[in-house]
View (cartoon, helix red, strand yellow):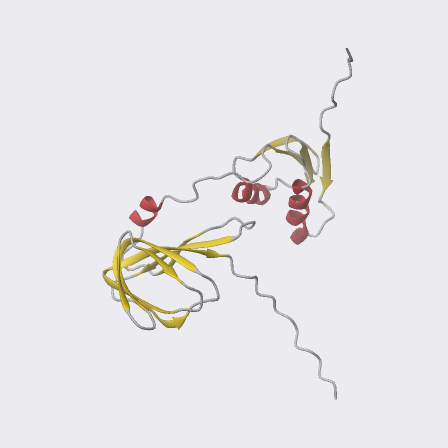
Length: 208
């Protein structure tokens, strides 16, 4: 019988003190992505990385452990251990509590899905009584809508649909739509594929 033991996974170290601030978090997340489950990454910084911790909580809540190591002079160290292979399913909002704190005159997006590494976008939209989102052509994306509270109407290219609490509505891509809130306003959840990131490029140089 062999007495050979499997060595414990090594903890990688990454020192971000000499790295530009805008590049620090992406560097840490890239290194974290390379870890196997159970492996750790020790981040060395010149201050307590609270913003990094907030970002890990947003992206990987429950899927990692965060263990500060005793700081030495200008070295602040934290050991991040990968506990699961992916982000974990989790509750991201309590719509009952959310809507319970929304003033009836509030309009616009009152909640958004936040994790950066996602394929979906989702929002809770509020329209006060009598307000509307004018007639327009929707994006090149299918959108699913669930009416959470209130009522209203959806004007399409040919018809007008009554919207009541609990209605689940499909908006085909590029379809014309106009939302009109009822006398109590309307609050609804939207879900669709994440829109492509807008890339701004410089105009081509003119050649005379």
